[in-house]
Image (cartoon, rainbow, N blue to C red):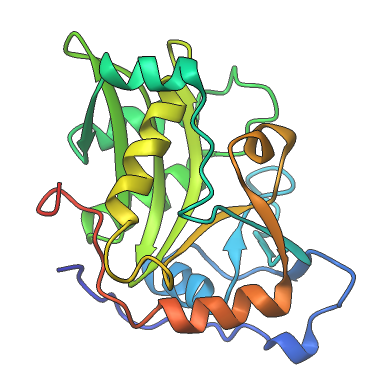
Length: 226
């Protein structure tokens, strides 16, 4: 089971104080484990907007991207790719995180602060990698925060075509249990690429309501669960 860290000294403003037209809801604080967990439980996530000396930004998109567990679109080519890959969980978390944080990636946002923070959360059991392996090589994967029935996807990467999508299919398969209708797979925003996979937008209010229903559920992603 995950280890609950000390509580955060910071207090996030409630939804009644968020600008209804702005995805950005706060600045400052820290990336300690307790602060991160409090943020996700409140419907927020961090993403830097400047350099290391700039305060951290906290976001709750007005239109939130979520992937319905019964809405994942699996193309014919992706079905073929699934047969050639093995899905593993948490066997190469550091490598997945490093690949997602590669500074050569366009629009990369995972800086040293973020990388260190999520590594700590992984060590406490709150962050997991889902990995696509082929011929004993890591060729794609993703990582995200799991709190109860919430899996908040943070980033994904691929070294071969469709490998990150293979990892996503592996994640969705693990989330599809008897509580699947209440589980919440969060993608932060909907992009054209994510929309092609079935990601939809929901309002901030709907997201927060679904989050409240998901948090009490038992977690299912982890090395013990497969």
